[in-house]
Length: 84
Image 1 (cartoon, rainbow, N blue to C red):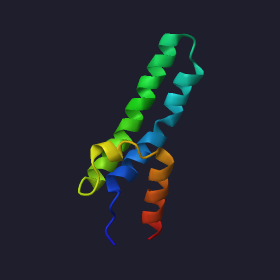
Image 2 (image 1 turned 45 degrees about the vertical axis):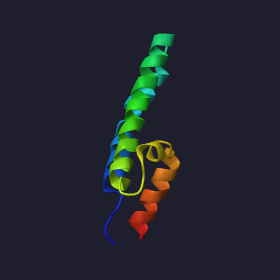
Image 3 (image 1 turned 180 degrees about the vertical axis):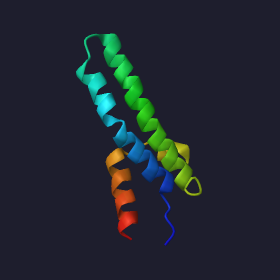
Image 4 (image 1 turned 120 degrees about the horizontal axis):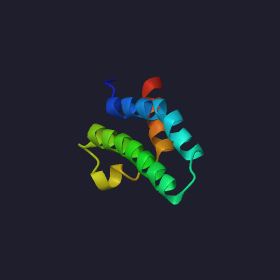
């Protein structure tokens, strides 16, 4: 079976690889501006994963559907695909 979630898998790997940096931003929060900066960083990282999933499933998913699938579900689907 051909891998269907190749971009999603790569995006999740990139998201995870950058997690420590984003966590440090959150740990270092001192002001509301710091919180807002962390939120922007986290949302940008999640957006990359969502976009990758949409690209992988554009033949059957709209952006409005793809963008609401949570990270845990995407991880589960990628894992199931690897096991198949």
